[in-house]
Image (tube, rainbow, N blue to C red):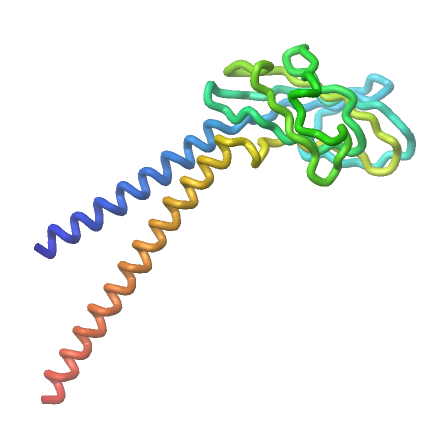
Length: 195
């Protein structure tokens, strides 16, 4: 009977850990990745950069950031763009993204940025993107990432958190039972030893 209970406990852990790994992989597979990012300044100089990017400037300039975004069939459809100072346009696969696809109050916003719905502009595999940025002097920069407001992002993270919480609960419950068992054995041993 004890062996059956132990095997059920082990099976429970195996299932939970497997589900957790599956959802972590699903989340990774659903993420849009940004690579080969270049910045072109007003004089035509091209420079490879890493996102997030930030730099000091002394004058008003126009910069173009371009690169590749890699998507799968099930990728998130919302990306978050944080510009400093202002985005003039966003192009994906040579098509200008319509303002009604952007969740914005303005095309500036170096704190939270704004979300862009890229569905209808991207296809599975490699996609090109281009962002024209206006700099008004001081610090300028750009960050692009998957939006935490994407429904798929929220769903996968809630499931991962739930599975992790259940796993922790079972783990601490297992430790509690082990401790109880250990104390009961020690107590019996003490009783036998003293008698």
